[in-house]
Structures are given as structure tokens and as C-alpha cells.
Image (cartoon, rainbow, N blue to C red; front, top):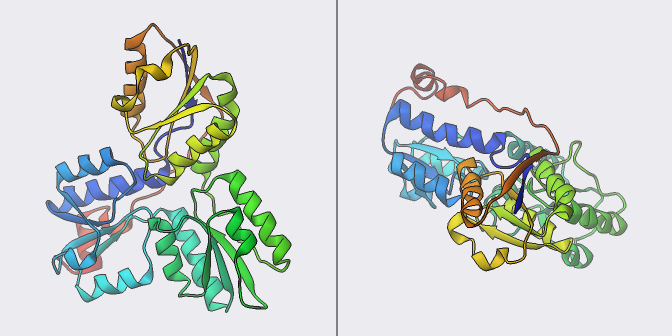
Length: 318
């Protein structure tokens, strides 16, 4: 069997930064460090950080006063910042800078009295945070059907922004319909879909035709992982989204000569290699890594946790 490893795959710069923020906070201040929501959407990453002393919560009210709290890579709305302030929490903001850019756009458009259309997934942590910055002047569109049917009161100023992990194809189709319905619709100055999402989708589109099946390593809660699987399915490939090698069924491989393997932006490489090892244990395999796009993006961790002195300077002690 021949295994094609798509590159790029796995961790993006925003995920690496978020995980590093948690580890750095634990290193500087010890246990516990609280994290609102999952730092990234991957059960293995969350479990590992829990074992190191991170405590994940869904509500800021569950965080003891005066504690250290991290906001996840998906970001939060202004109401969460206010709640943290009222509880005298020391906040470390691990929001991905590309998500933060979307938040700034939402805030700017709202302040300029625009009505916003947010293209994204209902209930996703990133979408919830972004809608918070729009302060109620926002309509959520999840798919083509909603783009066709959504009713928006007459307004002279209408703009759209997007979740960073959308399918490029879906995004383009939705925006086309919105422009047909709302010709004066304003677009963000820079596209909101992140480089990592774009590159990983591009790799699947480029390589899937060479494979009999596609295995996407990723958590089912991860929007970008699900979309990689959806893209492969749309071009007619049998596709399986697995958290790790333990979820692979041998029957999937019957008659298969070539497998494309990729992973979502919140997946540790060790779990991709675990899939490779498992497949090689079933029968002899050749492994080929194919690079479709180069990535050299790096985001610095927040200045307040580069050293304990800088944190104490910003927050005046613990």
C-alpha cells in the first residue's frame, strides 16, 4: 500500500501559540491555570494539558477570583472580558491573531453603523466570540440556503465577515449569492479565512485524486478538520475522519492501494505518525510526503508571559 502524506498538515501558528501560552503559564505560575473553553479543538491536546495542570471551564463563574485565566485560540466576546474583570482574574489572551483580526473588523464595522453578515457555524466558539463584538447588529449565515433566504432590514451599510476555518468553495458560493442579493455589500479588506485552512484544503484538493481513500486525522469538534473531510467526499473519495489510529477499521482498507493522509490544524503530528505506523502494521507500505504549499508563519506569545517579571508588571502580582 502507498501512503501519501499531505503537507502542510497539523498545527498552525495560532494553535502552536495557544498551546505554548498554557504551558508557559503553568511553567511560570504553577497549577492550576484555568482555560475558558477548550484551548483548541482536539481531545488529545486538552487531555495532555489537563495532566500538566490546566483546568478547562465553560463558565468564568467557575474560576476562583484572583486566578489566572486563559482565553482559547477561538477568542471571546467583550462580555467575557467584563466578567473576568469583575472577578479580578489575570487574563492571558491566547486568541489566534487571525481570529483577533476578525474581531477588530466586527468592532470597526459596528462602530461605523454597519449591519454585519457573519458567515460561520452556529455555536462554534469562534463564531460566538465574533458575534459578541458585533453587539447584536449581526446576522449569521451558515450555508447557501441561508444566504438565499435570510431577511435583513433595509440598510444603507451592509458588510460581511467570516469564520477563519470555512471551506473556500462554500465561502465563495455564499458570498456570490449575497452579492447578488445585496450589491452594495462591503467585504473585509483582507480575507478572513486563515492561511492554514486555505493551504490544508488546497493540499487535499491537489492530492485526493491520486488516492483510493482519504484519512483525515482530527477531532470531530474541529471545524477545519471536518471541512477537510467534506472536501474529499465532495470529489467522490471515500473519506474517514478519525481522532487517531485506534478509530481506523481494517475493512476500510480492503482493495485499497493508495491512501491520502492529512490532519486538521489542531492535531499533533504524533497522531498522524500513529496512523502511518498502524497502516504499515497491516501490510508493507511505501510513504511519500508531498508538499503543496510552504508555511513559515509564527506568532509571538503575549508579552505578559514572556517572563514572570513582565507578567507581574502588567498585573501587579498574583
